[in-house]
Image (cartoon, rainbow, N blue to C red; front, side, top):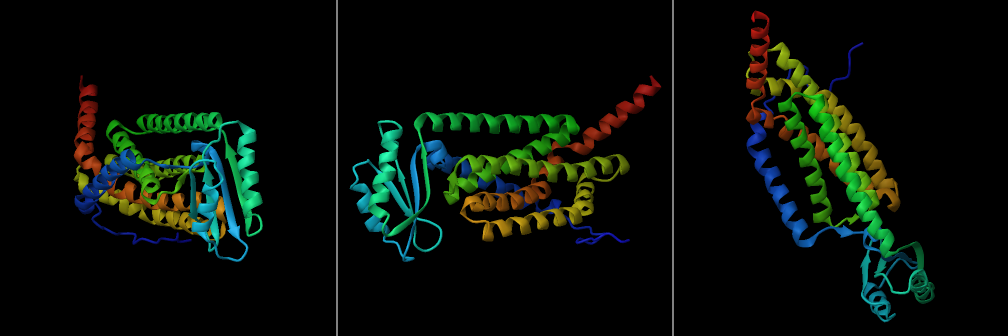
Length: 312
């Protein structure tokens, strides 16, 4: 039975040619991410920032955000962030942490319910204290760092040195661009966001390993083929698999974005962006960087050493 192929079997598309724009483009986006991160930071959610978050839905389908903000500021609980969200009539309120412990946070929620309960339906209420939010920040940071280090260690032992360096560069590139998505879109960064980043790291690893496994196989098979042609061949021969994997993942994530509801919408949006980034990175970043690292020359050196050893 003939296998399904979404890419011509004998394609010779020159992917390496596009490194002239993919490298400057990724470098520009990465630098902008670092600058914007240092300037504006992330939009930390209630998990990391602490305080009280309430999401309201107008019973009439129309919300007067200005009036809600003015009323909430009159509570005397300090600065309050009020903004529209989701469908028409949705309003979110975020109050800072109040002195007085759990009783003080409960007083904020009760005051809001008494004031807005007649006109708005409370869809979500979350309260996180300063101690819990600090522990979540620390645990989340440590988790991401350990996961990234474990992936790098795996890549270092999984491939030869040059291939490992290329894979590590691609993985770091995907992480930076994912953080840039949070910085630019101002999506709320919470514990779900950390789960999304770690999932994207795993997807990036999967895409890179598939392409680089084929690259290593072709390096041993075609010992005189120029590096550029060999890398193009490895991508062309795995492109059908890449398209199938990416499209099935994208279709699943689109369903979650459109029909999954607010609880999973943010995670699905970040993952959808991450699939595009990881696919782009495996083709236009990780593989072309091997040309500059000199994977062909180092492979030739190892072969020469292997031939000398038996003679000695």
